Image (cartoon, rainbow, N blue to C red; front, side, top):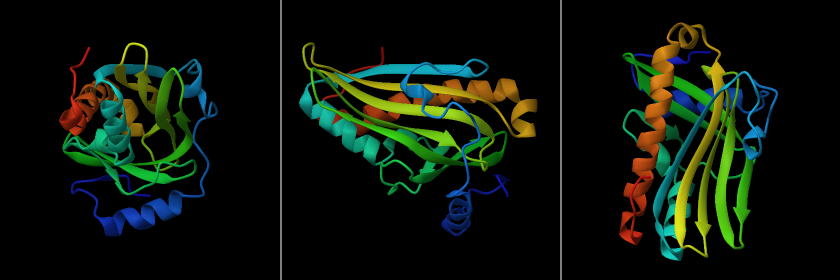
Length: 200
């Protein structure tokens, strides 16, 4: 299983990689824990950004999440961007660090689609054996109808699995923090025509 390469993985590499991962088990026990309290023994990261206000912003943000816009960062990419947001779907997340492309396999654990005083849409995915970390990450759009505010919220828990991720732990942690900031900025760019706000 080749998860590191000097070149960005091509579609011809990604298809068999995901096919091989699709039926494998998650690599952590607390599957679904981002819906509640993350487990002990993991690093926890939280990013929460106001995208704007009102239903048009909410709808635009939901559409952006469906297109995996939160991963259009240049140094991080989700493949395929056509992957449907549904439980059981498998996606590859590629990230560039220390001169290498790191290829990671994830499966969607659960989805969120709630209407009410606070409407929510999102999903969480968990790590598969073809991932340098083990853990789970949730991406959520929230619209508080009373205040009008629309928020993008990321919650993740993780710990290194691959030997290089353990050796390079400080670098990995910096990249994880950077991902939160850049992902929020990507969502702001994606919904700007609908009236974006600013990070808070």
